[in-house]
Image (tube, rainbow, N blue to C red; front, side, top):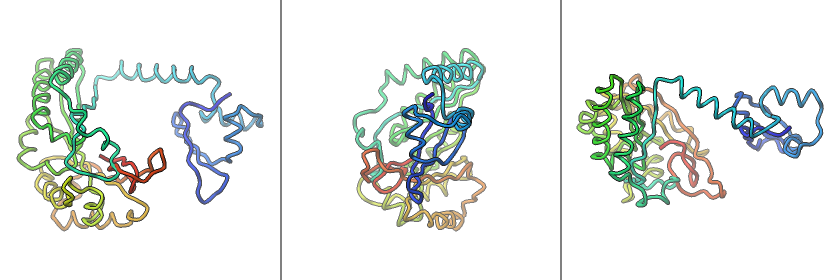
Length: 298
């Protein structure tokens, strides 16, 4: 037997020689020794009861290729049975912020959706809606609102197709929040805008150091002003990225929101994620994670 394709491990810094194992197919979490993990990877000997337990939890499998095929079949079945289609559309990798931990920084200036790709997206999504599928599109970036004209063109066409085929269409925007003014939101709501995902990395001094404009100026004030202007007309998912040094200060951010008269009940969700180190071990750039790490939030 061999470890599942869908197993990942994490070190236990306070327990040398131990690690945490997550079997994602069964949502099983366990602590085990480095030595046992190495034996599992090498196909070494282990107690029968131990082997049976690991197999039952989805940690050990007989055939990794068969496991992959089973997962493909599962997703194919889900897609066949679902009457709803969710799509992520990356409009551009350009951004008006210069977050030091942004994993997309190397791609800036290289990739923006052109008209041919936009037309292909509209055509393919219209075909799926003609089959009776409701559609949700998440517009992503970079900063998606740097391509506002393109976003509106796509949304207008998809909304028209949805009406034609008797299905629903809506879209969400993943945005840094600097361009999401009330006039922009009021323009997009009739086109199907359902919610926005914004990021604040903490109180102003922390956020501005982690999410400055390209000019170096802090972005906190602009984002807070926009949240205040739109929170009564648009559901907001609020995210943030924290480091080991600053995670305790997120309550200050929530207090600032309340002080600005922003009702916490207006947020669809509030969640914060750690900045994670890059694969090469360096602590350098990408928003949504730890300093000199990669961010999980946009």
